[in-house]
Image 1 (cartoon, rainbow, N blue to C red):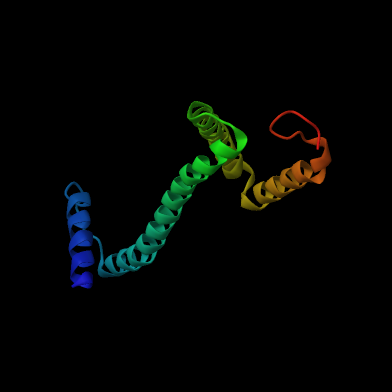
Image 2 (image 1 turned 90 degrees about the horizontal axis):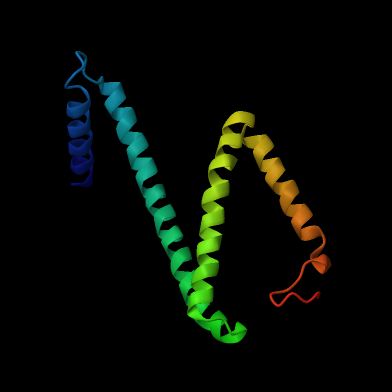
Length: 132
């Protein structure tokens, strides 16, 4: 039944995509598309579930953290928003650099910057601005 479901979806996509073109997708193309779809969709679904769990866990961590650190819910929401804004601002340029210089160089750059950030934890300040 699942195979028939995917064959139907692929056939509908092929019909829609070839309405304006003269040649239909070959059998090899259909087999390839089906294999790629069957291998990618479950993996992408797992990634979606992990991302959802991550967002839910931030909310649960906020419940305990707000009480421990004395944050109001507005302060926690503001901090979450700043984190999201920073993520959005820096993710697009990072992906542009990734496309321009390649994955290996980008991965090395990220590793080096992470090491520099973690190399001197004694120089960083805690939440209240006091040196550790």
